[in-house]
Image (cartoon, rainbow, N blue to C red; front, top):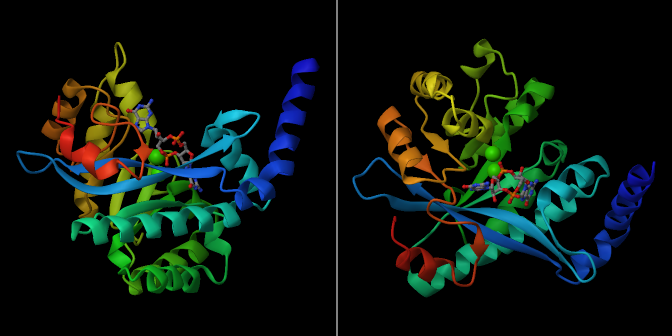
Length: 269
Ligand code: C2E
Ligand code: CA
Ligand code: CA
């Protein structure tokens, strides 16, 4: 009972503090590099934007604690827009400083997909920071497609017509039918992290990963693996035909400030 109660008041606290936190910039965006592993030497391809809440009293709060909560309580759209804007500003800043473009990928909650002005909002952001649509990749979780597929598919089609690239996140857990998958408008598949975890634990095997890589080949889209933690895992994924990876083996998500120096100076150990 006590634990339940504590949990409830923690939840209420997060909801109560949200608006103030947003105004006071307590949310920070970290970036995790993604690499193209098709060439001999892996090449930086983009950076995933991942939000953190640095709460003045509760400390560092991980997104797993508040994203599902904000999705239930109608706050996620405000937070996501904040993260997308921060990310767009960061891409612009890297571009100005380096002269080369490092695309960012942002998480788009299934709730955002129902926002009638979603496409206009994203296009305005591009204009504001003078970016092109292929510099802001959109990660949409597979389960968003299964809940109201017709509406989501048409939204995604419109986004792609505007030049946005869609990465289907957490692929393999959203229970899309195989029939539906072949009709989906997507540009990349991100393997759900449980496949990687299960494959590389004791007694695990990589057969399901191979099945998904086959599906991606059939769909003619690249496969991205996340939560890759060791060189052995990376080698194995490469051997199976995985195209991109991100994970602690190379880097945790880091603040945008030092990101490029950090990526440049960190070798594939
Ligand atoms: P996700 O989109 O599947 O992101 C991948 C998660 O795996 C991130 O957790 C990342 O920090 C973690 N990760 C990456 N590599 C490794 C690794 O090698 N080992 C381990 N153990 N973990 C690794 P994070 O940052 O805690 O985010 C959790 C989830 O919260 C994300 O899962 C995403 O669904 C959601 N999220 C994060 N930021 C945002 C956001 O700005 N908007 C929305 N709507 N959702 C977000
Ligand atoms: Ca993601
Ligand atoms: Ca994921």
